[in-house]
Length: 326
Length: 279
Image: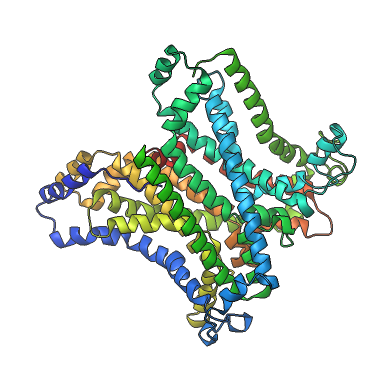
């Protein structure tokens, strides 16, 4: 997200004003005040995010098994041992991580693509005002507003083989299959994961794109219509390019969220996940808390962080270069 | 976009398909919460064999739902109050002062929002365990640990959104307050905050939703004593029976407060969420 919350001219005018404002105020206080105001936020961010991240990096280099959890300073140094195990694809740990990584890539790409497409389709459909538009919009926002676990639990029930509505519609009502398929076990698990994730996520894409559409002036469309451009061409030549800055941020955020999704697999499958639905965050979680081998879990987390940073970096570099050329 | 006949057909189809996609789970949740247990144990039926509110009564007995409810409420309210207060101070600093490290602060804080939670989970758990061993402050298995953790989750977005709100309030207003003899904090309390009320409300609802719906840390940091709804609702399926009607009733009850809050504040939300993306 862009951090440009303050515009530069207002900023530049600021110090002059505050000097003028209160002659009786002590200058020392106003110099320290912003830091004082930030202190609680900085302390908490340090305690919960920054320090744990550094500790996590340290953890990935030690043999932090269950014997050392309460007495971590005694944990023996492992060097790159945890990493070697994690990326040794011939043993069970490395193989599991690689498979989980593949599943997560497939899951993220499909989920982001579907969420974006649905969000865009709905935003465009709701672009011209019509009666009941605000009701439809409110309805579409409900999946996003619902606590994640409440929505996923409902899907869990819907995807049950014998008692769920999905098989009822597919098998009993439509007769598409003679045998009731399992949705939460075996190969269908990935399809279920994607469906549930899209259900929760597409409305966020919708919300963002709809707000982006509002900033496109209507007369641009009118001018294009006079020139004989149909709706599809207007969408391709006006809507899509105008939404480019929104899309750049939206796609990245959607990807980062989906790639580290934990709620969906955890609430959908419980702790016994089918291999086809073994997303990376969930995999690391299980690898750490089932075996209490935190060192190896931390190494996997660091690898995940490095991967996400590289992807983000490449994405920003490529999209940034293309913008400059355009 | 012109409303040709083709467009109207497209709109009708999209509304129908997406409407069903959104509505079917909500329909299942609501109707199943009104079904007797036998209904949810057999093949799915579109309508309860007889409408009953029994699941809404029984759900409190099958698992200690009331305790989870109290835990979730205390944790979420406390996390919201602290998070909003801390975010207001930080956003005021970012919006109204120019100081060294301002950009570093905003970028660092926002980037922590993007990192996956599992990165902090293991070390934080370990840090909490060791704080308990050395200082004696228990943070794993207590509400305090959850409150501290959750309030930082909503902090980055809250600071960013509030700073944007504060920026939109003319500085001349603070200046007038300063001339009248208020200190900077007086200007914040008497001028900026009242003018930014919709933003503060939106941020508060966002913080509450974040804490109320958190699963990952709750699954590790809670024991039976401080278990919150997000993890507690799973207890219905560990019994010998899976009480799907009660699960749906409980899911409905825990959702209603946040959904209503969100929908009431959606206007401010849309503005806040998208402001950065559009800029």
